[in-house]
Each structure stands twice: as structure tokens, then as C-alpha cells.
Length: 362
Ligand code: PMP
Image (cartoon, rainbow, N blue to C red; front, side, top):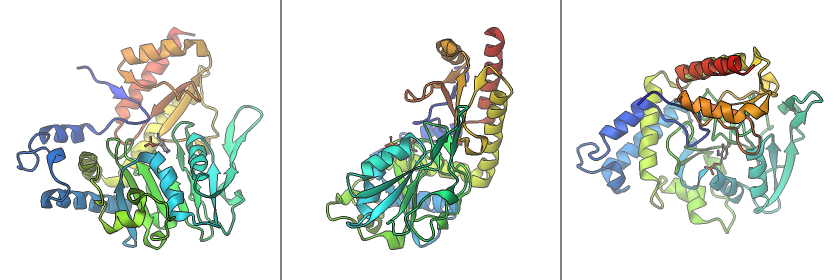
């Protein structure tokens, strides 16, 4: 098989050494004679593995003791409901910062469970450039139950680099497409959540990191499997967790530690993003309209100036082993997702192809 680089936004490519290890252990894990997916989540050997995965994630992100790490079902959208159910009591409101598709969807879902104050921070300049209101100018409500934002908008290719100062109001972040890609100070957050299928493992698992003092005030109607306190009190095993996804996430955490942790991968992610943005900016054949300080390093959107060439671009890219570059249907154009598992060789292969395609189609 010739080498393929998969630029899908999620489920996304996973590190090759992780996949090779999972393959080797697939039908006989830890000398049990069984696949890990065939074992009880209550067995001692499974519990040991699950605890190690949590310990490794805590280590990678320097998660303090007063935060719980939950391994949940339901994906990012599950958390769009779980966050207000757990953190938004009657009579209070929550601030939702909207800068793209996912933060907009999170706000819309939260409205089903309480009062939501939508703060749109997206600015479109006359020349078509997209920018954002800096976080110190956000009109936040000092009485809010929490402030929700999405630091990396997967569809739009927009990233908020600074951690907003919410003056003591708990900050909730949807880190689905940016978790573990660069260092963050967890103590600045009340809650962080992320669907696994980008930087953590396969879909089916969602990580929630929540400060302990925020537990225990869920709305009465909260389904028990969405209740953070119930989940925390039962070590994420109130019901059967996504056992195989948890195991694979554990392998990804080990891999990340072995290659130097978040600090090392952040350096590589920066180099990968620079390589691709430089290629886009140095050509008038391709364009990206996001102000440079808000450009995503994980999901890089770009457009061909002549959009009638889109189909040809995508077909030829696939012939070169460059998969899933089509932009999200709501924004069009192209999108290259450069998560942790994407090697810089993949980005170089994409840049080489873009330059070749440009030469052939000028
Ligand atoms: N938030 C973000 C930032 C996402 O990128 C996605 C999925 N791409 C979601 C939420 C929704 O995740 P899920 O499909 O797991 O519900």
C-alpha cells in the first residue's frame, strides 16, 4: 500500500505506532486470551488500564488534584446538553461566545435547558477578512453561571489563542479539536470537554475535566449518565464506558508521552501550520481569509481563487495519497486538519502537491 495522509477533521488519523500496537494486542490483550473489548469494565486488569490512562492524561495536561477527569459517552454534542444541565441552575444565565459553527450549535442546544446570553465575536471586514473581538472586549455578564467558548472552531479554521479572563466566572471550553495540541493552564478553566475523535482516539469517548466545586448542582431532570457527579462518584463506570475507545486513548497518551509530551507536539504543530500557511500566503492561486492571529493550527481552511477547479484539485489530491481535503459543506473550499498524528511529511506532501497543481493550472 502506498503512503496515504488523511486530513479528515474527525474521526481523524491516529498515530501509526498506536494502531500497530492495538493490532498486535487485538485478540490477546495482556495475556488474557481475550480482546480488551471483550473484558468486563469491572475486571481488575481493565480498571488498572483505565486508571493508568487517566493518570497519563493528568500528567500530560498537568491536571490538578481538585479536578475530576471523566470518560463519557455522547460526543461533543452530548456535552452541549450536559454542560447546561449540570452547571446552569434556574434563575441564572450563561454567556456563550460565538465565533463559528460549533460554538453556535452549543449555544442553541443550551437554550433548551436555561437562559443563554449569546455574544457574537466574529467580525467580517470590508475586504472579506474574518477577525474576532479580542477577549478583553467581550461584554461578559459578571453574574453568569459560566462562560462557554470554543477555542478552536473545527469547521471555520478559527482559533482563539489567549485564555479569556472571566473575572472569577467559571470558564467552560469545548476543546474537541485542540486538546493536547499545545499546553494549556487547566487551572484557568472550570470545565474542559473534548470528543476523542481528533487528538485522543476513536469516536465514542468524550473527555470531561471538571473542577470539583462545580459538581453536585445538576438540574433535577439531568439524565443520570449525563450527571457529572454520578459519573465522578463512580469513576466513569456508572454504566458501561466505551471500553475499547478508552483503551485506545490510553495508548495515544502513552505515545504522546514517549515523543516528549504536549510541549514537544506543540512545537511540531506550530511548524506544520507555518509550512502550510506559508504555502497559501506565498501564492495568489490559494487564499485564506482569517486574520493571522486567529488562524487555527489544527484545521487549516483555504480556497482556490478559481473555485471551478475544486473538483479537479480534490481528485488529483487523492491520486497523490492526500485524503479528505474537502472543506465542510457549510463553508466550502478546502480544509486540512493537522492533528497531533499528522506527520510533517504529510504537510510537506500536501504543499508539494499544491505547488504542482498550481503550475499545471495557471
Ligand atoms: N465541538 C467541536 C469543536 C467539534 O469539532 C465537533 C465535531 N467535529 C463537535 C463539537 C461535535 O462532536 P460530536 O460529533 O462528537 O458530537
